[in-house]
Image 1 (cartoon, rainbow, N blue to C red):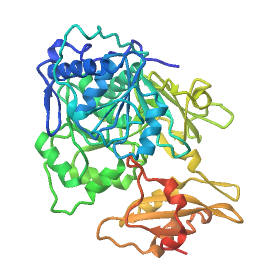
Image 2 (cartoon, helix red, strand yellow):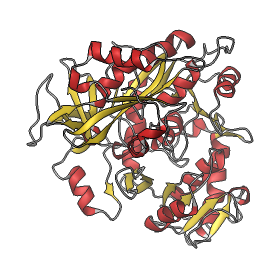
Image 3 (cartoon, rainbow, N blue to C red):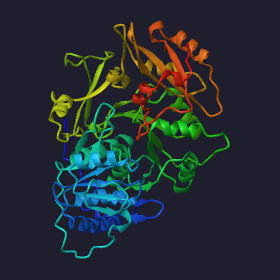
Image 4 (cartoon, helix red, strand yellow):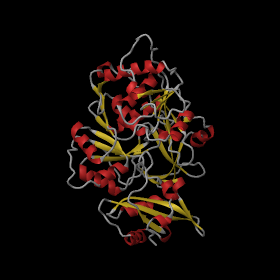
Length: 499
């Protein structure tokens, strides 16, 4: 695998940062506003507290908290002791949370209090985290190495039980460095964090990237469109990272909802495909550059992104980030050329160490030296990647391959359509046929017959959905992606048939 020319710097760790950072603003939320030195001191105090529960090299600390500074402090405190952090979605049920706590082999849980799930492990409530060291001699010297596992991020589990993705400090340092280089992020930058911190995007792109270069971070507890725009106006961030659903909510606000967004140099859109119409509408309304990127948790978040200052090609997810190689592979394992369709595969210092305790799944994903993404894509002559679809989402109708994103792009072309998703529905004759679901902009109306006619105009007959269902909103998974497994499980009688 390709690597960076030099080992990545671990500048996001308090004991690796330059002393000149100490008095700079580092992290704030609605309760705390910390300099780099204050953040580091709090990390030491919490690390001392964790050590009293037996946390040390090789341990795992589970963090079941909403977005708040204590979550970030706890992650780095685990690292201070050579332990791994595994963030848990704070709205998980006890069954879901206990599975992750058990699967990760957790030593200690940090949560909101005694009613939160622990799977029988010791726990500390966020409000009980220690703020000052009791004994400066109690902590060992930090010795974090690039090969140590920093994060266990659990996949959504849409194809089975969630798997723990093992990301090393080398992985996450490489990701922070690659994105900072690609986006020209410096100490002058200020990120507004809005994505949930149980997701690697929020940890690497919103937290670690700015702190690795001496920038600053403001943490929002949740996303509400009007509150978010007010936070932009108040805090004057220079960038943020979000998913298409967030941009859809923002552009759907009434015309009288306005905010000063002039501080934003750019925003990042990732985690799920975004339509050209949504990207253009966001830029037109708010005036900042919206950069679409692509990546997987297994690749520590991002592998491609459109350039900030170079040509941006709408409909693509940009070029490979510095230090990564992105290629297209056919079903026989051969790399294919420009313009040819195949599976997107990735190499680089950002590629995961594997899945925890799942050697077969690890071999399947990494066995030939490439990270296999499961996405179908095409590279153009300039190295820009266009995603065609997920391999597992591909619909096979009577032996013909149908890619849902192609149909979704047509549906997005209707001015009333805010979101669209196409899934395969079982058919006695053809095996599968495409079925579409759409949600409209607020106060907009769409006629199903119009959508069907739009599809017939732009698509061959076999790609035209057999039914189009209009919903108030499309279901989302915890990260904000449209939840296609939920759509596949819907009963047709509960929606509006288009044919």
